[in-house]
Length: 311
Image (cartoon, rainbow, N blue to C red; front, side, top):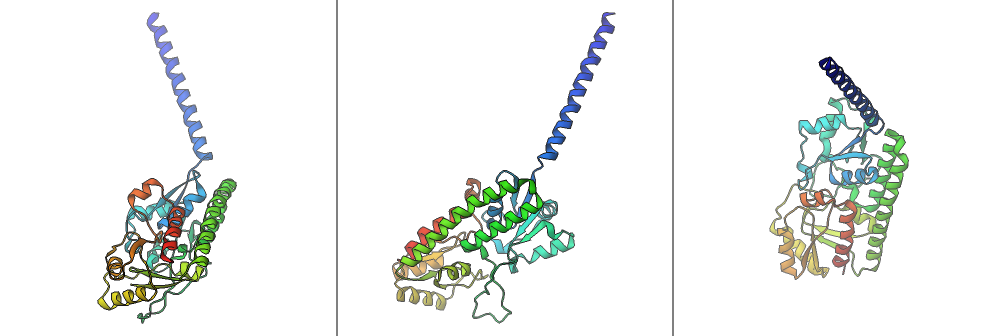
């Protein structure tokens, strides 16, 4: 009798645990259904940061480009392609450096409703390369102008509102805060330029800032146009930059992030100038990525650099 009683108690306890488990599973599934985490994949740091700023905690955002890597050498892995296919939204820049995107979208039948090409609906500028004999390409570094960055943030907000209208208020609030910060940085750039004694920048490096200089009415001289594949300047190029730096009494020679400062240092040593970094925000180091450095952080630092460069 005692044995039978123990068996009954065991069965009742087991059934209770089973029922509790089923209920917990149902609640968990319901919770996951109502609070599903939307996923966004972005091709480079700028697009990643804008999407992250808009969504806050309301989505999981992944950057395809590895921190510290050269954007123009990027090749997607099979895992990257799977992430793009499974994402609720894929945000990319477009242009020559991201020609691989169209092939992936077409071969995997990815709907345009799940993608956002940032060069679309933007006022584009042709690349400047007087030595090129090929058909002109449009400069893809649209985000280097804070005003363009503001438009991009708004476009991402609108797209996300279509995909997940339940979060539209959260997206809008996040976007407004980020746009407010970008607007203040834009105003600072305008103030610096209007009060500067000169209006030309010397880059001992590539030059992905056409949208930036056009926005603020600046001139420039650079070792290489756009994001040229060249990394070694010949003697004639260095001599040209040295002559220009002397002619404009330039005290700061600029370089971009994640590149060698060899050319900039050579020019600086010949002219008594210093070398400073002016970020194009195309990528960040692994350390900065892990610290959560943002596009706004980078271009805010650029305001200080620009002020020195235009003295």
